[in-house]
Length: 194
Length: 92
Image 1 (spheres, rainbow over the protein chains, first blue to last red):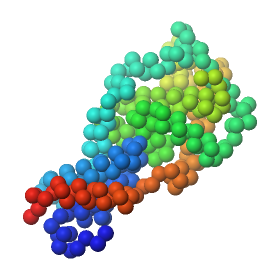
Image 2 (image 1 turned 90 degrees about the vertical axis):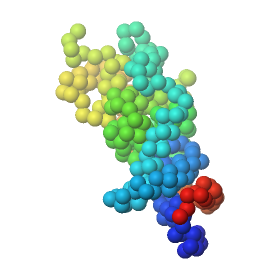
Image 3 (image 1 turned 60 degrees about the vertical axis):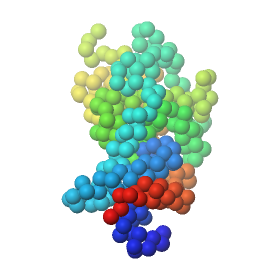
Image 4 (image 1 turned 30 degrees about the vertical axis):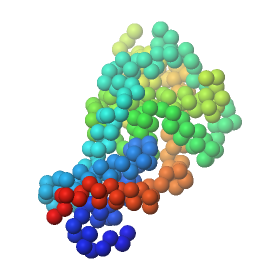
């Protein structure tokens, strides 16, 4: 971007955008499902940074400072997201599994035998495609938590920070995601009856 | 029923949790004991591991093919415009 040096001195956010835009976007992109929302979050981060630029002490690097602001923006996003389920109650944890079990808590909808299925071979992109489609159908919080955990190696603590919630809720979120994904694959890849 | 005997429903919750943290000994024993007797929960656990393996091995493929991790040129332009419009009076 050919920002002339004059502009560069006056408006810092454009320099930040130039230098850190891609990194910030990449960070946001794996934490929200939609690319445009990731873009918005970067935009709001840069504006917020500009408005609070006096508070930047220089003790951390600009990149760290901006990432910190972005983290808050992402958490805000999840807090404002219309709750598709309430993760503040363990009732939901019960509810999500209820239909799979009988009153004695034994399997009612039994897991199918994938091992005996010829499709249980790694068919690369095709199977991954189904997995991604399944993740796309889940509530965003669940799929994000699961993707971050399994593909980015995020810890429970990082997820708790992102969602501003306690550890138990994080485990429940991951549990639900695994449960839904497994069932979705069973139906859409292994062809079990929905 | 002894304290280390858990229902299928409890066990699958614990199986998932064991993938995210180290469970207390009683729970680990509970899972092991339960799986020795229960084909369905054993199956469930194997399937979770299978999914995990696929995702980890497919990490690179999906990143390159499906998600662009840098800002698009248009995106960059939009943000630039937005910042120019919103940081006007504040400039020094």
